[in-house]
Image 1 (tube, rainbow, N blue to C red):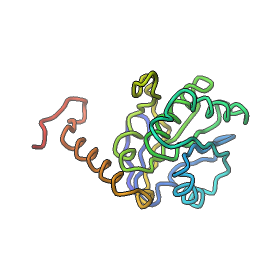
Image 2 (cartoon, one colour):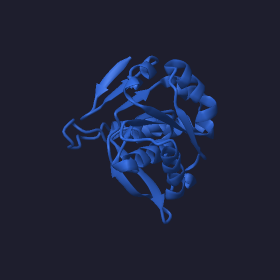
Image 3 (cartoon, one colour):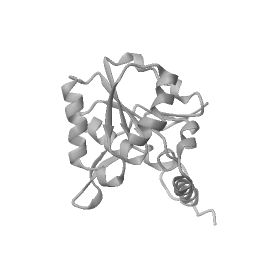
Image 4 (tube, rainbow, N blue to C red):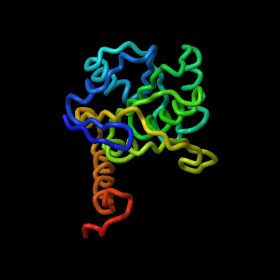
Length: 193
């Protein structure tokens, strides 16, 4: 397992990454999934962590990344009396991570959340950097915040559940980041090509 340090959180990458975070400091936990990650990734996560958490399920797809679905998340957290010592675990791709992070950041003025990306695109981009938001008035990520997760846990085993077109989309993002990489202090370096 490899640990990368971001500004104020760690990113753990590898087969043991799901055991890298101490979940015991929270009074309650919820896991946000869509129907795909519930079927393909949740059993792997629960087997690796053996945590007790409520499950919040949202429909998959960019068309569901909106305030209406955020209300479902906020209602679930409220009905289970989540407080500032609670944790939201976002287990999914970009939609789950963006919307789950946004919902956690705005619930009770912010509760802790972690990102567990399950698509290559989310592993390479969406789960990193604290970019959180929802679509509004047909505009992508129109409403949002920047807020870092407590940690990001990247386990390559989740890539086994992806169709080829999603893997190719993720590889395109990896290549894009390699071409526009920065020099470590925010200034763009010369492109590789």
